[in-house]
Image (cartoon, rainbow, N blue to C red; front, side):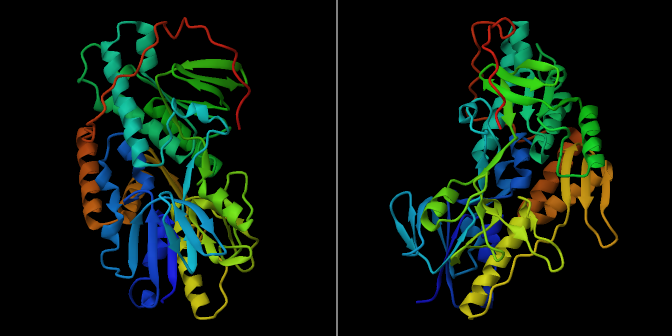
Length: 454
């Protein structure tokens, strides 16, 4: 039998690893790709689905369609729940066993509520299409409920939207919520003015976009404020419930009344990391990521490689100290190609090579005509913001989308939205209005805030 390669997960890393075995490079191996969904998702634009800017098919592609011209790839819809490193098998949730000779684990990441998973029902995160649909439903239905509400305090709570976390996802969501309220919805309601909605961005650290240089972080904060977003820095969340959230700042505790809270503050590795640790004895970091060797394999298990958000990987460039690899799509893609290349080396009886990450920089959009860009170049860092940064962000994301159709559709939708301020993906299937408490949120008694989490 030909060597059997099992790839768990078809995100950026898993997809790139499978594609690396196409053509003559994959002539002597059989590949099985297992994923919990039937589609590959372009996550950098997922917030556009959550904010009704794009439809789901514009940023997703069926996995089977992606591999239709790669006959050595078998695609399976399933969830891996256990791995046996000695028997070289993986167990699916339905009990089926998959045999492998080489294993690439690219299971990705999920939300982290810093030990407070009870907050999840009140503050959904954004990792999957289901998450995006739920956030979109909550945002649009909050405006609908406000149109029906006579109580001023309850209406104010419905029209106050809170995003927790000042990373790229939080910044992009907050800026787009402001655009929806200020430009998309005015004129469509008769009893409320959507422009009166308040958008709050709550960040526990001293600045937004902490991974970027301080000057660009400050520029991003200024652009958010110009859009009408109230940025709260140094504000740590201590509690979230159906009526809002409690935050603690240097000035003391504060209650924020909101019926729509979105969580963009924490990321945790896939639970499959724990299954790997039980099967192989590998080490996990604080976020649950698997600590890997320089060549992305597990210590003592050279046939198992972990890539993407699940891997606590480091870049090993000659003449430079090891540096952690950020959890971004270029890193996952490069790890996928490195894992595939090392498997081919193993099959040829050659030594594997350490992973080297090429950092192309960071991009983040704040809103219409507003973005920040931090790029590396031979002449030094290239940093700029504003309109030209927004154009750079736009064309970069279109370029990396999967499929020519998706690129064309996204460009067309963005052009239409730019000139008309319209957002066409506003259809909601489950149009349930937010539940309202009997008591006004302004007068409801609250217990004392809990200690900060995380």
